[in-house]
Image 1 (spheres, rainbow, N blue to C red):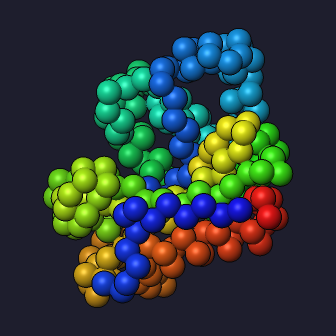
Image 2: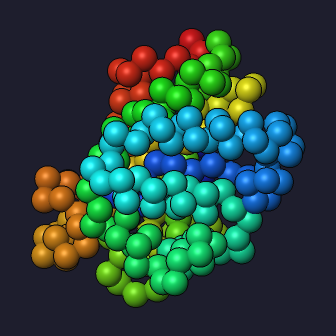
Image 3: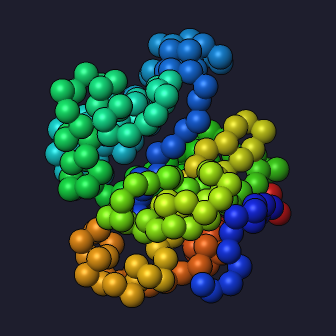
Length: 228
């Protein structure tokens, strides 16, 4: 079964490119305490990170990715490169920014590794694929895809970056397995702006439902087993 949550998706015409997102209510130790012993939880996380280690060219990047994921899982009031770097004990956010902006690693392969991991651990004959969008409020005009647009995060039109996500959900739990950045028409029409923001030249305009269809097709082609 495919569950399409269309509350904020545009139906007419008018990449956070990194698919590691898990929602917890406390930091890594407290989150582990809800279900498993902290040592067991840490071992499971290390096993997952070992699985994707080969997607990173440099060992420094691999280690930085690990600390970044731990920051995403931590109970921080706000999560950005500054707060995650501080949580990791770094003196500045530059290492985290480098990981996201310039470091060499295959984020699509990481996405595929994560999807396989999720299916291995959460597979269920009654599982569903859930699609929805979310937005990140932004200041300025340089972040890829940012403009004044409606975002459910604020419940109104705001300066924001919007992405569409695909989640695998079963009785055993749920996790994100894919993502696509929504790039508005105004951005696609300005190729110099796209290049400056790191948006590849081959990216064309796609509505949010079109992005959702592409992710669903990718998951199903990979054998992701939602309920029939």
